[in-house]
Image (tube, rainbow, N blue to C red; front, side, top):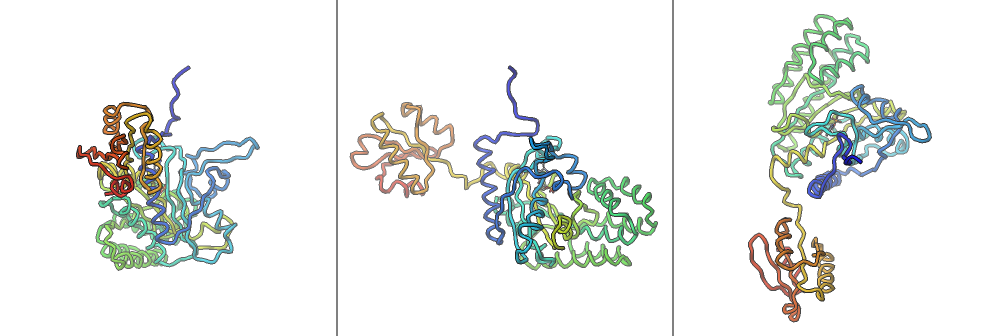
Length: 428
Ligand code: AMP
């Protein structure tokens, strides 16, 4: 029989990576609580129809889809938004607005595997439902900023745009929505010439094409100057001008929040998903070309899922990419506490070692116990190799005095500590 391997694009998370993933996930939950987002858990498997309803060709063509044994066409979720829209349009339809929802878990896309791009990956997702105000958009940006800081990232930057600026021109030109979506997807991939070919085929005026060509060149990291350029460029296109004014308002609030955020405003920025209607943004770290997270406003999505017209805005963060960025920033996450190892010097002391380890766990100290029956020298060598910070040695002589030996492996020092004071001693 050939050797078993993981399926292409799927990964095992061995203890260190699993721990970092759960650490990042725990931070996403802390941020959710800080901002009042309540967690929901949705199924990994949803109906194909739901997931494709508004997903955009890009995601639709990359879904893991199959028929279940009851012959239902189902798929693994490629994102959380469709599931949330389903819940908002059905179970939570009468919930007083606004409300905030959070979820975290694995999502699946048949992407081409490479660094930072997998077929099974983890996202945290925050959605604020029922508010069309700029403050709601700002909240999504601020909580993303806070999450980056909370996991331990310092050098990151936001790219911000507004889908209404581009779409305003296309709508005023009477361009069919389907064609608009295709144009946005091409622009998302920076395939501007193909986008302009489609626009010409769609019959847009030369003036509009010229405005769009100038617009996609507007980009800068002084937000208000850049918005001013956008406003000047779209004069005469009412909907685009409104969108630019909305973008200005959002940026004003972000700056006024006192949160020092590095922002590039990019008028040619489009996101592949069809459902965005307003602000769009992504967050990056300098050493990675791909986004750590992205989101925006989608005011028409809930009604497309059969709900009342409901404005909403949200963001999804890629936890795997956050982990990669953390590796670039520093070797390990300092809050990941290493366990203490307990080693009994003799077989007869094993029950005493077990008793002490339970006592330490009761006090919240992570403990591993030596289970190989090895001699002390070998057990210490092994603890050292695994990066354990402290070893508790249970020996007969000290036990008579109700004490044990605590050895600090990094400093190669050891002291005798009374058992009743052990938990505290290990915390220092
Ligand atoms: P999206 O909804 O496509 O903007 O995805 C949100 C975030 O998920 C992105 O900003 C990435 O951080 C992450 N992401 C998207 N696709 C992948 C993938 N194939 N592998 C790992 N992370 C991904």
